[in-house]
Image (cartoon, rainbow, N blue to C red; front, side, top):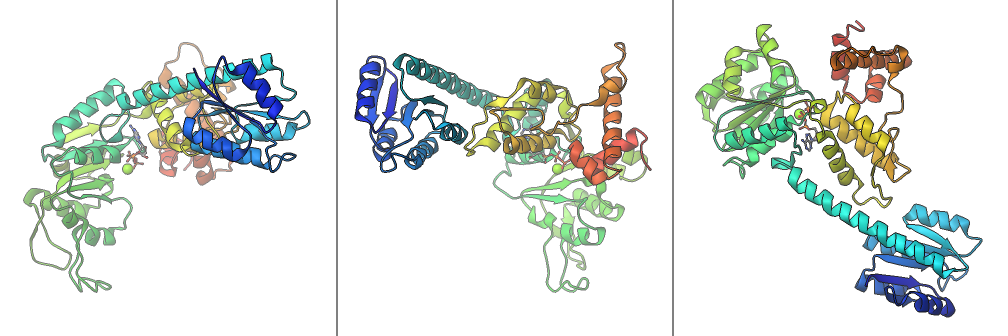
Length: 455
Ligand SMILES: Nc1ncnc2c1ncn2[C@@H]1O[C@H](COP(=O)(O)OP(=O)(O)OP(=O)(O)O)[C@@H](O)[C@H]1O
Ligand SMILES: [Mg+2]
């Protein structure tokens, strides 16, 4: 029999409910908050009925709310049915906002209350089952290194990672911004024999050229103004481990030469030094620029490319990963709603269809940000498109699409129109527009360039 806890300070009500419910449930009864919490701790009933007016505050609700909050803290999945006096509408609503499952107004009509209780157990079972399934799905879908993905391209990528990780070959990761390149670099490291050695990331695009060289290769004391002591660089720190050269496409020409020398000869020199220092580091690089084009344009050295891109791993954009977007959305939903009292149960139908049809220019990072925002903003248990920041209608209606156009053409047009609308609404303010569109500023610039908009 299911365990049910009844909390009410009135003897006659406890008797009435005991008489009415004892044959259906494994019943425990409590007359005040402390007794109730002690029982709850021990028996963990899935459903509880709670009278809000408990001693010593029979006429108020403070003890009732304390009890409610404690129970939900101990087990957020508990279905608490709050029982209130006839004139306590406000408290009833507040209780539901606090996380109570439902409320029931006195006087108690046994038949009715039974239905409410039965339904509470029913919902609890469905939710338990859902949770079990979700955990199962998570185990099944999390590939290596916490990378979630089940679509064929991702499966193939996992295979490649497993194959190359244990050798020391250089790996080159490409993909649009936010597709998970750093995650892949870390996965390669964590499956390699170097996994217990350092993983040293350096973002070649984020550091000014004159500082990047000492950052990478270190410097001797007195090598330049301000070089008060000898300093090791990132490459040296990565000795015996993995060096992750993020945004390698941004590496200035002079440093491309020095990096090439390191890759060929496995030695470096600190800035201002003459000594050759032997470094054994596995190199993983990443870029979101079109590196082949950069080579053609003479911006990136071809010989460096061949040295760094022994194996290339391409991460597909999120919009090409099919149902993975829903797996990821659910993963982030669970991750961000953990520890939040207000229970968020999932995505509403409109939100789901938005997740499926949206283009995701900022890829997984954008999805992660939108879900995080939604978890904070949501007022209802099922997330709405507006919670995800999709509050403006995509202006396809401006001119209906002919049915013969390809998806690509339709997408391009919607993208162009939406960017145009937002930009003009924001008076051309790129920072604001990119925030609304949920993409980084560089991405917005790229999109504007692609559509021939602006300067
Ligand atoms: N397949 C995935 N499963 C789970 N989380 C992911 C996945 N892909 C990306 N993420 C998460 O998305 C965010 C962005 O990933 P990451 O930083 O690796 O992308 P990136 O390609 O390096 O982006 P950028 O080009 O902007 O540097 C991170 O928080 C990462 O944990
Ligand atoms: Mg990155």
